[in-house]
Structure formats: structure tokens, C-alpha cells
Image (cartoon, rainbow, N blue to C red; front, side, top):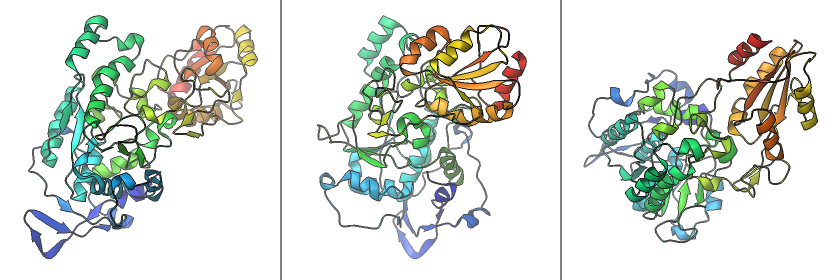
Amino acid sequence: MASASAISSHAIVQRELRGGKAGTVRQFDMVAAPAEALSGRRRWAVRPAQALEPRRKRESVAATVTEAPAEEKKEVSDVSYEQLAKEMEHASPLAIIDRALEMFGDDIAIAFSGAEDVALIEYAHLTGRPFRVFSLDTGRLNPETYQFFDVVEKHYGIHIEYMFPDSVEVQALVRSKGLFSFYEDGHQECCRVRKVRPLRRALKGFKAWITGQRKDQSPGTRANIPVVQVDPSFEGLDGGAGSLIKWNPVANVDGKDIWNFLRTMDVPVNSLHSQGYVSIGCEPCTRPVLPGQHEREGRWWWEDAKAKECGLHKGNISQENSQNHAANGKGVVTVNGVSNISDIFSTQAIVNLSRPGIENLLKLENRKEPWVVVLYAPWCQFCQAMESSYIELAEKLHGSSVKVGKFRADGEQKPFAKQELQLGSFPTILFFPKHASRPIKYPSERRDVDSLLAFINALR
């Protein structure tokens, strides 16, 4: 992951060269600002879109990116993108975007969702190269997102290329299933009509695209995305497999460092962020996240964690058995061809319950002590997000009258967990009282230590 100091090095110390004006473009040297120099700079607050006053188009900056030295230019069809990904693994987002724009020119565009991926537009602006931006207007976005689109266009002096779903397909879906069918049978059908198919049409007009995917956004599906790759799901301008290149310049950057960059560069942001929204999508399917929750948990919250991709980046996941995420029987998920998901909640303070163990706990009407048990799947990013708080809870309760346990409830255990343990989605937290057989399900989605302790103390 890129550190805060790495992001800080993207801050641009600009000084005008003497005698160096050409038209409206000002020439600047770009040098890395040392971390200690930044500590004395005035910190900019990130301003919500509505609070911004229109300002005139910023002059483009012709920048020299020191991380990406000039090389003999190759035809893009001759490039080994697997090798290029290795070469640029530790390059800055600015250097990666500069290379992408240099290679593809007018045949590449930034995919902009109206969230913190506005950082991509700022990086592109800093390269001084011309760039294109497109966005998917699903017809169901928040009003704040539409307002933010307008602010971004005025701030950078650009025109966002909007893509819309097919009106006939939307009409057929709504007439047959209603406006909110996704709450009943999942979001995939609606996303396919409103997002995936419009994206597929849009990408047919490009040879490459730039996304804001980060590894820390979704550990279960995005943990191994490279900074550049041949797109595994979509086709580009020339058609056929391998005809589209996908750039992920902030893949190795932590979310907190993205926000440090946005504040430092005084970049406008969607006002929804100040209301607790982190990951922003369509209005009916997005809500603010609570303490202890992963940022993607604000999306499609009524579904299992495995469904937290809308289909735009479905190439991130490769599984033989998407039904239970454990096709090999060992609980290992293949993500971008890499099997690396190990068990979680591993500490001596947490008892690892087997199927017979949890069944015995269910049968007991008089237990020696109460139990709190998490039903989890190790590949679930929301289980991963609460791992530290659950371990801290176990350590606080260690030696007390309350036992803390875990039960892996995916794969072949899932039907049992749904029928007997009230499993709805992962993670599910149960409290087994001392003198009652039926466990009590934790009703809140707040998974911070204080909230969990309040729940336990109210029932113990």
C-alpha cells in the first residue's frame, strides 16, 4: 500500500521558469515536496460541491514526471502489459496516469463515478496532457452527485461524456418488476441494465480506460488488482478479446491517502461524503456507513458480501463455484488468479467452534457462561473489516464470564446456519444467554467495540 508520505510526495512544488510562457500554458518544474515541508503548509479543508463558487478554468500544467523516464515509444499492441504492471508497481498515480495518457492519447478516458475518484481527474490535470472523462448516468443517482458533476466540469473546464441506459430496457424492467425489484431478488439485473450494458457500449469507443479501483476498497475482490492489465471482461475499439487495456493507477493507494491528496490539492468533492457516505452509487442502493463497517458495506446492504460488485469490475473475481466461495473445500478464493484468502479472527481469546461445537451450544438450556459468536466467511470483506474490533472485544472479555467464539458459516455450513442460526448475511453476531436456549441476534450494523459491549452488557 502506498503510504501517506508517498502520497505527500505527489504534492507539486511549482515555480515558473523565467521567460517560459507559451500561449496560455505555463511551464513548471515538478519536484517532490519533502514530508517535513508539507507540515508547515496550510491544510485545505475539502469543500462540499454546493459550497464551491464557480471559478475560471485552471490553466493546464505541463509537468515533467520524474518517476516515468522517457523511453523509446512502442506501438501499444507490442507492449507486454503484465511486464509493464511489474515495472510500474511502485510508481506514483501521477506517473501511471501520465504513462497511460502518453500511450493512448484520445483513445483513453477516465471512468468517473462522482465520488473520491475525482482524484483521477486531478492527477490527469496535473500531467498537462489532454484527457477525456466519461460517467454512467443510471437515472437513479443522488441529486448531490448530479450537482457534483456540474461542479467538476466547471472546476476543470471539461465536458464529461455521459452514458445512459437503453430506455426500452429500463422500461421493460420497471413495468415487469417495479422500481425497487432489487430489494427482492438482488441488484445484478438492475445493474446490468443501468450500468454494465451502457459501460460496454462506452468502452467500444476506446482502446483503454482508467478506473479508481483500490485494493483496500474490497479485500475479497480487489486485493490483487494490478496497476495496468488487459481488461478481462470488456472489449475496446478494435473488438475481440484483449482489445481493451484497463489502468488502475490508485490500486496501491490507501483510501486515507487519497483523501490527504484531495485536501492538499483543494479538490472539490461530493457533499455526500460529509454525510457519512464513503462508497457512492445509485440513491436507492447507497447509504452512509457506520462505525466499524467497511466502506463497501454502504452498498446493497441487504445482500451477502459476495454480491458487492455491480458487474463493472467482475473480472476481479475468478471462482469455480460462485455459490459458496469455497469450491476447493479449503476456503480459498481465487482473485485475479491468486489464491490468498486465509482464516480470520485468529487469536487465543476467540474459540474456533466446529459444527458439533455450535450444535451443542444450541442444545444447551443452561450454560456455564454466556457466549457471543460471530458467523463469518474469511473471504467476506465486511468480516475482514470488523476483525480488529472483534479481536479487541475478545481481549476485553478474556477472563470474564463471557466466552467469545467464531463459526465459519459459508460453503456447506451455510444452509445449516441459515436454518438454525438466523444467518442473513455475513457477518452475523449471536449472543447465547446463560439460561436460554435460543441465541439472540445482534440487531445493529454498528460493529465497533463499544456498541458490541453495550449489546452484551444489556443481556449478560
